[in-house]
Image: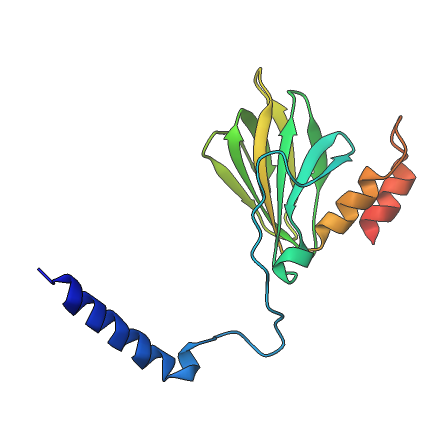
Length: 172
């Protein structure tokens, strides 16, 4: 067993050795901006109603240098998003509570707490909250940017959806 003094000496030597090797200090490219840490507590984040899908933006492209977006969705049974395709983004749906019927490509399944589905770009997908309780899902989007479309859709006036306007926003 190593005593405290030996541990401190070895730790100090290891730290000094790493500090003398600047190549190990930073592996990212020079074009990358330094990201700031961020803690988002339960109930925090920008809330957006995207054609009935209740979303809370937890991390956006502004937070992640465009790498990904993280959105929490909490919706009652019956909430659904029709079949659609993203040509630029991959999505991961991870269910935390409730049940979500997901179709990705030709496969349909019901996800329960702990389950996830991967919807790669260019693959049709859809989802619907099923069961008898609200469904809480974490949606991860790679790369970021889709949140801009969600925000614009969330800004549409209440009432029956204007499908021409929705289509115009989504096509951009």
